[in-house]
Length: 256
Image 1: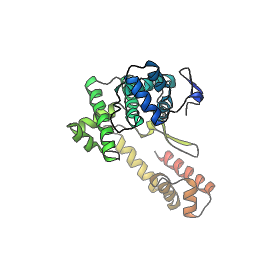
Image 2: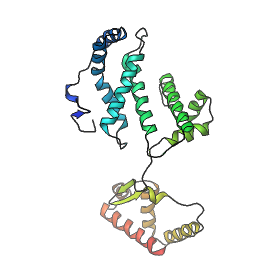
Image 3: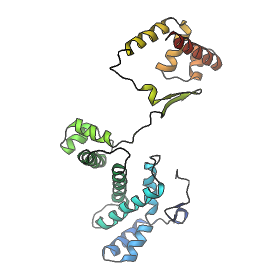
Image 4: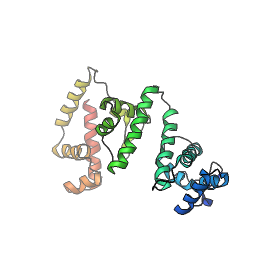
């Protein structure tokens, strides 16, 4: 796992066992009959399943130990509620249960507070999404999720956006050759009267560039090509592209 830990929440992951499907079925029947040891063995035998689900929730700033414990709660709920009479693998039922528990935890303990009604709508949207994912075997659209819920599309979009993780203004969104573009660089005020003046100044500065400089900036920032790709495209070295690009950008900065 990305956590690079052998031990998580006091559990040595290298010692975890993996049960066969027949073993799971047998233990589930015993646990349903009140056998506490069978229930405990079933939990231990599915901890690797919890770890595999956990990999989808990395890089969220939460403690791996906390997430693992929450995932185990979801596993226990799956064990207690699984219907052994159905022709369904336990893991097929358990994975959505574990994911749902983790999502609820991340939703309820996020840094920004969201209203209860909005969180509930988001939770219902995630449930509808999982249902449609199983039904269609593909990622459902927002319109399909809204229809499944009987809700307005705008309400579903607002709810799902409300539970997304906040992003730092200094989060890098693009980096190449040491020049990093941050979220802050893409934020603007549409009501700023000086904005259109800046746009005019930039356009005038670009018009003053040499044709090759314009072409390089177009390929780099509008086509998204790397300096190496630009160099191959126009038949010069990457070093020349870098020099011309920086020179063109400096000219624009001087103009504005």
